[in-house]
Image 1 (cartoon, rainbow, N blue to C red):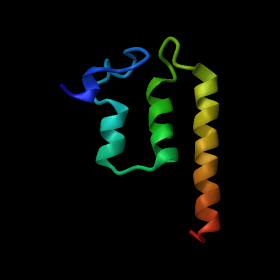
Image 2 (image 1 turned 180 degrees about the vertical axis):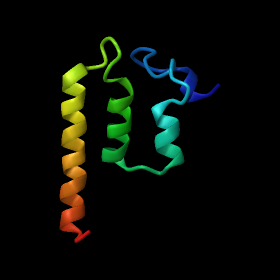
Image 3 (image 1 turned 30 degrees about the vertical axis):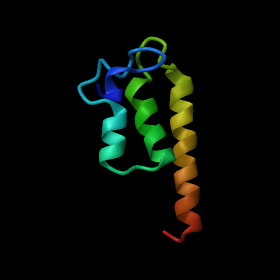
Length: 73
């Protein structure tokens, strides 16, 4: 049995053609990148967070921008 078949806390990702964790792991994304994918995938869903999820996405993107600026990119 795959861990993908047993989502803890609901089934909001199981309904998707590709679950965010599959995409995140296949592309070797870090924590901030993965959270952007996770929140953008479900923000419009009932109980998906709406504007709060969009604000979280923005914050994670800000973290990524700060890191890149610090690293000189």
